[in-house]
Length: 122
Image (cartoon, rainbow, N blue to C red; front, top):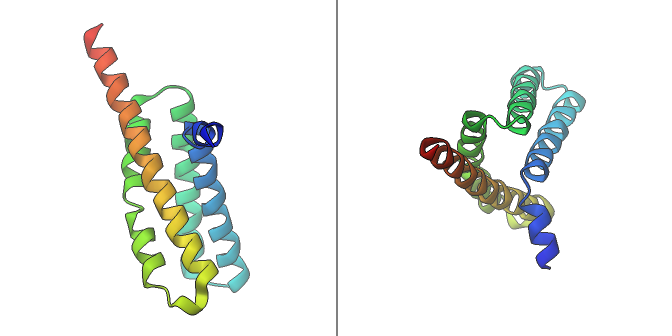
């Protein structure tokens, strides 16, 4: 259990899950033919990939930006709660992913704050 939590708290894992989720959303939008949502989803996916590359390179501002973005995913939790109970799989997925993304946002903001404190001391 502890090893799983350590794994889930890694920045690269959080960002990989986010990219995978956005990719699944894009595929479903393309499959359903919703042309109005394809371009914004594609642009979001590209932006998240660019920010992920910057985070991997150690950019603390990118870490702060993605942390704030993930904290804003609290809406996914609300969306999951508001889904009718008949769609229990979708409801559970929305609540679990939303919670994980908010948890990831807190972790990334803590890392960004630690990096800025370390930078200001030196």
